[in-house]
Image (cartoon, rainbow, N blue to C red; front, side, top):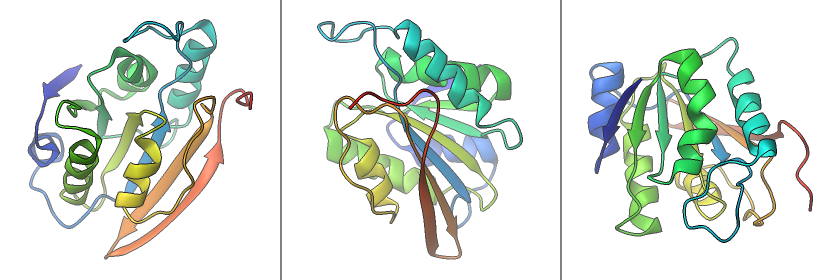
Length: 174
């Protein structure tokens, strides 16, 4: 697995996909899967979370990602792990230490720097997934803490944004 801690995702984009051009073609954004503990700061995934992580990988049977972006927290990496193993995608860790706004802006800039045919998976958090989608031009509602089954798929082509929200894996309990 190729992995890099980054402060600017555009650097990882160039390393993963060659010379950067206008924008990424397809961006998938998911929240990390169910965690084993609500009291630990950086918990592992629960059994349900492990199944959901496998469901994420199944989404990419035909179109594997070139780049997977995670936060420094292990639950985002563990959610993306089966996809990374199946695809051999480059992994970028987008830091959270400068705050959520900086994290989202780093992701936005990095995605927009990727080649037109890039496929990206972003594994985020309930408070970042909607913000990342909105920063890329796709409107989506805030995400409740108990929602794990939302998948946002965004197409960026020639300055145009289209997208859809799907559900995957076992339904979340609301």
